[in-house]
Amino acid sequence: DTEVTQTPKHLVMGMTNKKSLKCEQHMGHRAMYWYKQKAKKPPELMFVYSYEKLSINESVPSRFSPECPNSSLLNLHLHALQPEDSALYLCASSQGTGGFYEQYFGPGTRLTVT
Amino acid sequence: GQQLNQSPQSMFIQEGEDVSMNCTSSSIFNTWLWYKQDPGEGPVLLIALYKAGELTSNGRLTAQFGITRKDSFLNISASIPSDVGIYFCAGQLLTSGTYKYIFGTGTRLKVLA
Image 1: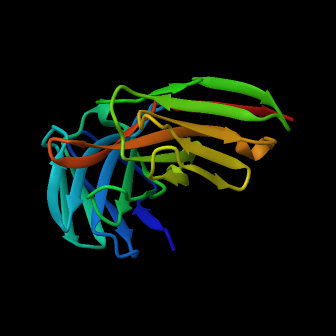
Image 2 (image 1 turned 180 degrees about the vertical axis):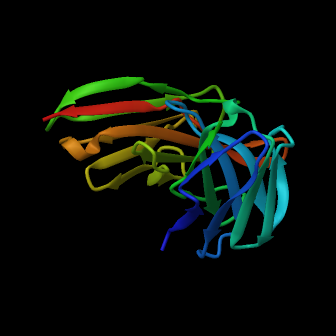
């Protein structure tokens, strides 16, 4: 089983709202990732969690706040977003982060900020 | 952020034709992954490559890890309409003591029946 699940599939939020994106995997992977993807562009790395600890933050604005409650779950908390933050947000997981690992993606959450 | 050079950017081909695309970089990678992405969906892993010179197949797909470790190639044989989509390469490299994947700019494939 190589499934990563994400909820919700679609989200529309105002600039003053607070919302959260959720990601889950049951492959026993110890690394989880958040990516942002704009239309017709490749995924851009936002955050990496390794063994439930944040190991990479690609200079993402503080209005995006990641959280890894346990090794199977990854959240992305959203607050005071801008319209330019509208994008497909992808979660991914891999066995580890030490190299030579395959990375599996979830189906994504389509976020629209109004 | 960083991106890999991927070519061609897009291609229209006839059903049954073979397709080739590649990713190149000035950096050395220790792993290459190839993905296919349909509109509104997440990328689906097609092939993983771990060694320089490695040639790996998955059905009609064949990918190679370049001998210099700076490039990778994907071939699709006898294309069918469901091959339509965007194909991304992703190379894993070590930067500042941390491994991460860098994605290619994508190849948009359209198959004409």
